[in-house]
Image (tube, rainbow, N blue to C red; front, side, top):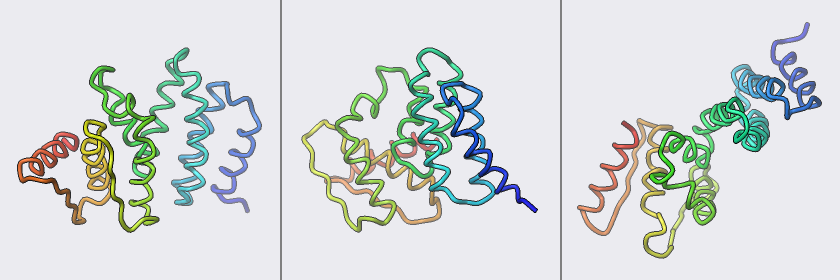
Length: 178
């Protein structure tokens, strides 16, 4: 007797062989990835699928609002696990001139990957040294809000060279959370 998870795996294999530039096929693959996670809790395999879906949806998003909405669904699904997706999703409704991450993504992506490695336990310590006004503090504020959202009962700390700066960090984190 076949289990629901086996059926989803077969459906995923079938969908991957279809034309994924077709919105319905791509949307069905996303839903299958979500269902697979719900049934198996295998986040890595589901994230590989949503990364595929997100990439194709991003390519078609400027021409079709359905793909843009699917892209945002992928970001939302990935946000608890992938810091880059969290950052992109957090700014999806901000006006272009008020966005922090997307205009700086090319510069900050390496730091985002390092912060991801820190969160994933691949690094024990991370020191970040970049020129002034690049976005180190703001990026770390977003990082703290991400970690606090994932583990609200854990201890979190962020320091600065003065109490006023540290207060500013926590005020910005509260703004993001609320």
